[in-house]
Amino acid sequence: MVSVLVILADGFEELEAVAVIDILRRADIKVVAAGLKDGPITSVRGVRIIPDAPLHAVRAEDFDMLVLPGGLPGTEALAKDERVKKIVVEMSRGGKYVTAICAAPYVLSEAGILSDKKVTSHPSFQQKLHAASISSDERVVVDGRVITSQGAGTAVEFALELVATLVSKERAEQISLSMVCAP
Image (cartoon, rainbow, N blue to C red; front, side, top):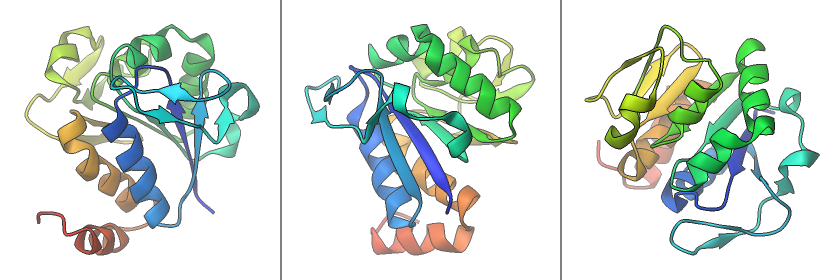
């Protein structure tokens, strides 16, 4: 079974996390939401989520894809956490998918994996993405095994692209139709 690790830090953007988790699970993908700390993680707007596991209890090699939701100060917490950077590098080097939305592509940049990659992010973070070719007009960008998106307003498109990548375009289209998404 395909499996995805979503890492949550206090101050995460709830739409970017919950929409992705929901849509991936609709596709019968195993998703583990891991918190930087034990116990509930609080979003930027005060929504409390109880992760499936604390980050220290998961192993990068058990997953096919990593998803990093944005939001502030959540993105900054992810970028400062050495465990997160290690997972980003391990999964990237291991040929796994490494994905991020909104401000979170900054974490990929800080981990040093964006060299020669085409990416997008929230416009306010594009200047912080070192060694990357920035696409400011594309809502979701796929460059090999790095997938990035712009923000909360693109979260459903981003999640559907992840389903298309991990399962199939047909499955992503089925889920999109069942959710009554715009074509």
